[in-house]
Image: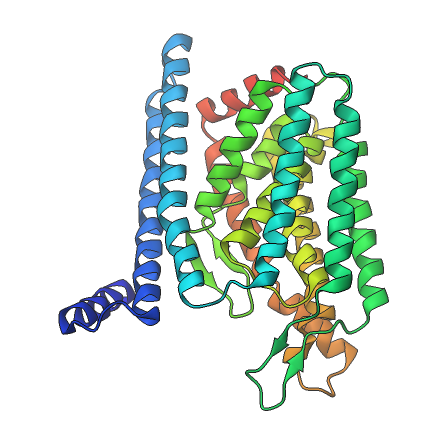
Length: 387
């Protein structure tokens, strides 16, 4: 009924000849995103039904069928990204939401992507200096981040009776907890992943990374609901990233997650304070990339379903902590000025509980997908090429 109401509002505006203003543009975008949700449900159900139908075919037919499924997924993903991505970016430009700070962080994202691409190309070509290239880009990324944090001021919100600057509740505490969170995520990624027998620059892993990031990015446009200060529950948008980490390891998963996090900022920028941007985007989604740590847990005894659930929970909790840290130290400004620390903590963890709903939906959809023989076989074959 809500979608029919949106259609009626758009039709009335167009029939009246008033032109497409900011509000009409937003209505059109919201309507297409709603339709995309229904279309995604149909596509996913269609793939699951197709996988069940072909489960008993011979290996050659199964291989061809899997290529068909991958082609459908890639085509659908880039279709959604192209249409909805263009509409969202156009709306942000049209409404004046994109400013200098947006382009500063977009530049940080560009530096990250260029560094990854250049390093992988050099390694694939067996250039001995690729490690120095990776180190140079890493240093440039860190320096760029420090400059942004040091120079860019916290946002001032003029929507209140008195102006509110989103300065951190305690800068040194926020920096400390952010550093500890980064250290925990990096430690899990590097020490929880046996990378000794894996080719980190293989064409297969890079191709899968591109596909999984694209699919997650496309699904992130399919939202059940969005919160006013950022955050949403999507149609299992993080599932491809979690599966990528599970198949290719936490180190590659971490890189894919960070890239995805920067893409999320480009898609829907919520800038209040520089450290907040890092916590809510590259750090929060980088944490999703460590879901593959569960493969190291011997007590799970190679149970794919259990490994997937445990890894998803760990990744979801780390993402939750990242958003909650941002919420506590920056978004407390939405509370009354005399609010206690307890109230601030309750607000931060309560508001960001959408992350728990989001990861729960990922687990449900993932369990349904893993219940099909074709899907499990594809994952096992991919893992076999990495081990």
